[in-house]
Image 1 (cartoon, rainbow, N blue to C red):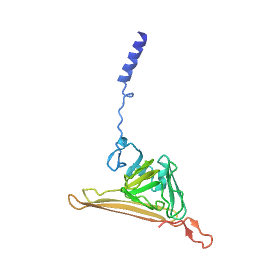
Image 2: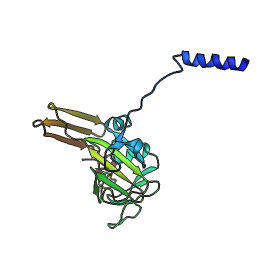
Image 3: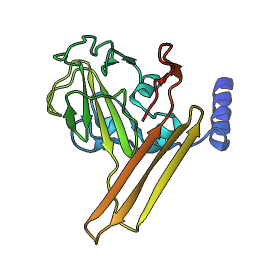
Image 4: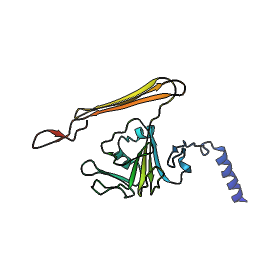
Length: 216
């Protein structure tokens, strides 16, 4: 009887205390990992997805930044314009024109055969999805390591408006990117986006004295 009384008193304390009873809501994440919009919780694939706000909070500006925010992902620069984007250790370590990466890169569900992601800067991006594990031909090409799908921002109906962002730093670093929404009636809208990036090189060629490793 004593134990029952203590249990009843403890239950009454839990019910009556507002600090122990709380409700939490989780924002729904919608992805197109199966080429249709659905909740990420309903997708039977290992997926990491980032929208515009998430990329800004995590400072994801280029493909190389994904390795610090996605499990099982690594990235390295290779010779010439090549790169090795790996998922679970599968990527592209062969330096040849015929090399075929184990990770497929897509822009708006369209496969890119030779994506020069090292030189690519993110801008006007709505969402980035990383699918880990073997992928079929759903996006037009199978991949043993996984797939990356980048979705650009879409035009929106409504009023004319835009946004612009600028950066300035050492080595004469200048970066400006922006976009403008243009409504053209009740059913048609347009969007124009662009980026400008210029930076002097931070390395010096000892033979010529010129600065190298710049961006333009």
